Figure (tube, rainbow over the protein chains, first blue to last red):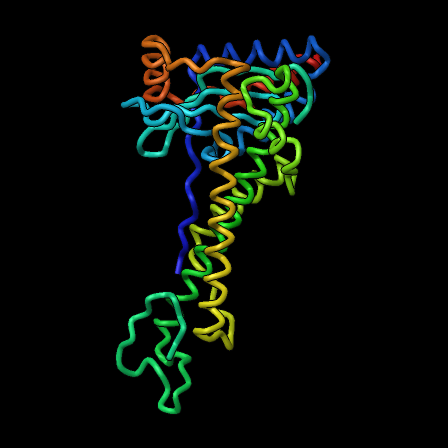
Length: 102
Length: 188
């Protein structure tokens, strides 16, 4: 019998969000924290694809986007929205914590 | 009389004629085993979720002027309730768990009895209740700290429109693609 595996979320970054991520990485590099943020962003990508409910807490229902959640991974704080079909994750803003305390 | 707290269909043929209450019907054991597996996975999920919240709360408490928006009791909880695994390990565990759930329960261990499984279920229900309560304690702490660092605002109309447009459009760059841009830049 073939067992169907879990399907990953399709993580969508709008143009605005892409720019915000680039700014975040640039700021981290300027602060000498590029490697730390790159590591966190790589792990975050995996978490968002496979288990976004773990890195975020729901704060608002917002149809048609689904639930808006505040999430965090390491030094990165973000706001995401998951659509009802659990297929898309939107990352809407990013914030870098001032120090590597994670 | 069975002390099994789990409602199992006591249909004919469930118990052996000698009074041994180990069910002969494989579906009765299978039901109990499925519950054990479900509870074990729920406990692992909650444990990893709590660890992620613990890491998030500690990092954010260090980033605000303590106690920030928290009560003294909440600060004490964040400081004393140490994570049991790293944030990355917690996420890895949950990714593994999601794949295990999709594959269904593993085979019932040979020699399992109703009593053993019922005992295990009772233990796991307690564990799950404790972990769920801890999660409920940590959740508002995380949200208060996150809000202190970056006050929550709902997405604007413009953000929503752009997000929906992006979702309907062709796949854009991923987080990893954007990271790779910087790595390529660093190499050149």
